[in-house]
Length: 340
Image (cartoon, rainbow, N blue to C red):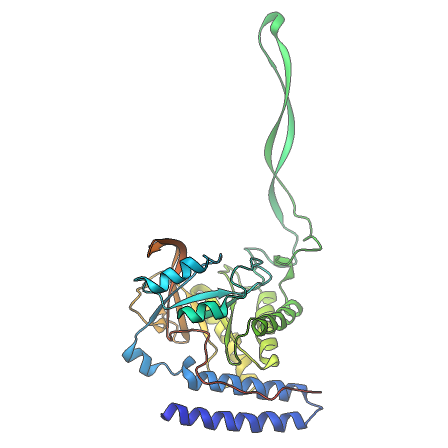
């Protein structure tokens, strides 16, 4: 009851702040920031960051993610059987995940009883320095001539074999959507807008967390920091959703500090939601904070395993979360639509 009363106060204050900001038509940023603060404040009160009680009653909620949609039958079987999983990753069609299998499945999955973690797979560095020419290994055909046989039967045979050579990689084709050369601030802003619009088209309510997928990087280049910072800012500017990050433990602290600083710069005190990948020390009974990152809301600890529940086999990654539906907001948030 105390939580519901607090949520009501935030919603009332949020509407006042958003209306006041809309009165100043010369400051676009103030309107976006006001809307974002309302969404994130509601997310905080509804359970995104208020995890203390959850840690006592429910140390963690088990979930899985898999890039290819397993099908309605398999997903239903994993909820109606003895599967331990209460939530699943929900992959939006995005630059580096063009598969559309999960799209349009929000209502189907929530009706089955699944919590959801919304994922947007953005640009990656793939071990490269973005924008710098690089060498790639390619297989090329080569005609090889040899003589076979003896005496009068000796004859020439020509055949084609494939050989691996090194060459300078060509630029990405015009229709490419995913390439290390795309990493940068301008692309991050554009794809943050796309993430919010795609999430809205899927019918997710305001205050939903969208996790930007960042794969492990041995070197975290400035262009990548510009990319994810711009992506986060674009989602904040949209005002409807909460930007979160999926990141490997190796990069987690740097990325967190950048994103937290961005939240602070626009007056948002809430913690940005982080989904941390770390295999060492993982246990399905642990809380995400036991990754060693106190800001972790989700912990991915097992990669690329295949499990069978209720007669259906699915290749998955295994995760634990601080709440049953990592992207969900319990309180319904109503934001004033911006007009300029």
